[in-house]
Amino acid sequence: MQAQMLAPAAVLVAWSMVMLFWMAGTRFPAIKASGSSLKDAKPGGRGQDLDGVLPDKVQWKAHNYNHLMEQPTIFYAASVIIAIMGASALDPLVAWAYVVLRIIHSIWQATVNVVAVRFSLFLLSNFAMLYLAYRAVAVTLFHDPSLAPA
Image (cartoon, rainbow, N blue to C red; front, top):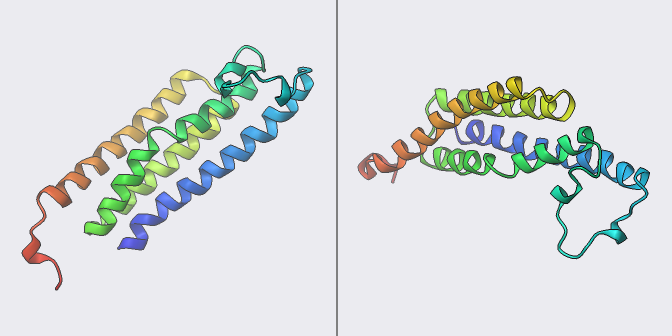
């Protein structure tokens, strides 16, 4: 059951790389079109400094990439904990639901970005994450070492 539990996490890692390249593929041409270059960036500048400088539709990809570097870190930890301790049959299904919802959320935010829909997708993914967090606690806190294989 370890591979089944870790596969959704691996897919979300790969999706994060897709978003990175999508972000770069839209952001660099937009920077060039604005008449700026990376050489013009002030020391210590951050991507969010480009809000209001680059078109919103370009920045939506960057915002989503940042989101994928935030909450999913909890997902990765919970997935590894559950995989190590032993996943139930439901755990990988919920992990896949989380990943599918995050991918749909990414596509929505990067293209349409109607906040009400985006929030609904985020909320649904959080229900999956809440379950996975509970399972990570349950499989560790209530683990009976006498049941572990020798």
